[in-house]
Image (cartoon, rainbow, N blue to C red; front, side, top):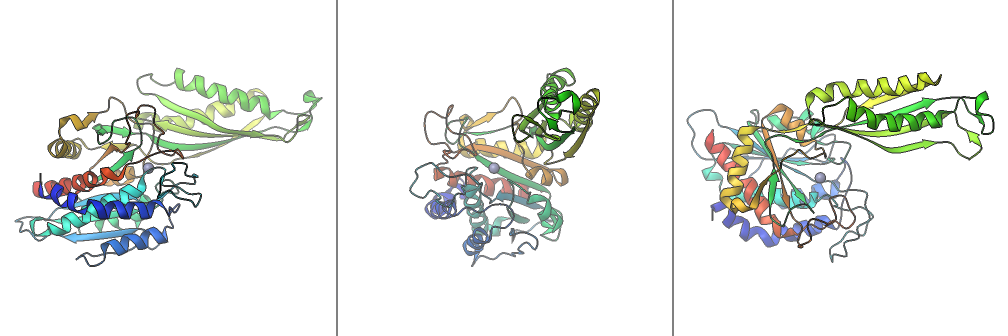
Length: 400
Ligand SMILES: [Zn+2]
């Protein structure tokens, strides 16, 4: 037992109560006033500096450590995201949300876990040779809260630049309960969106030769994108392109003017990210042109690669293993195809991010994944989340 795990065990019941309260009242996007109010209430009475967000309902808490240091006092950032999803909860839990929104990605546990870390480190503040910035972030599921928080100065909230940042994510499947998982280097994908409009010229469905039918052209582009990702990119550095939406027309005998394709694009290296937009555009335009039409391509760059700094990630996993044992850590062989806006923090300062399974059952291989209306996250994991965040901050400050 460390001081962090001992305090976390004591806080556990209140963290569960807070998590369940937040779980029952999820909010979406960057405006989370009720969640923000709960965070501020949970932090009240502690010796913290708390600048709240201007453009969004973020909360930043700065804890000043009181231990002596000889040189520059380091600053560590701990981050938890706070937003829910537009999902109708179907878990049947007693504290389930009934509002049509759901904490289907477990960010309610991130809030409670980070509150626990604040309280642990606040109790241990006489031992902290530096400061801790706690980043309670809205909008991870969109439109993105980390970017605006960085613009509003979260990385300099302590008056000095953050030296290292840490975050975690609960998962509702893949590993048994309480197992931590991640990898050094590239951990999560870069995620972009692309909107393609094939412009034809509509008319009567019986006379396609008199018009320009964009529908088969859009279908050809959808298929050709899958050929492109396997023929133009290294099989060991893959690209995922999914046409999640395809839309055209109103009726079987009317050829529409336009057809629309909406894509999500995932890349796992900077090199592929650099070229994929241009290749998609070239392909869409080229196919449309081959049929005498045009394609407009609106490519929107989203969250960048989440890259775990080798040194900070090593500190994080050493801490996992020290606190919970080597059998509670799995190094993932491959990156995840999901994306995270914690990556924007990682672009500015060395950072490390890790998953922890919070699924309570034995059938974790087939359990409902994050974002499912049936995703289950057991809040028994909360004390461990708080202890890990607090302990890694303490160790990082001591390292200097
Ligand atoms: Zn999430």
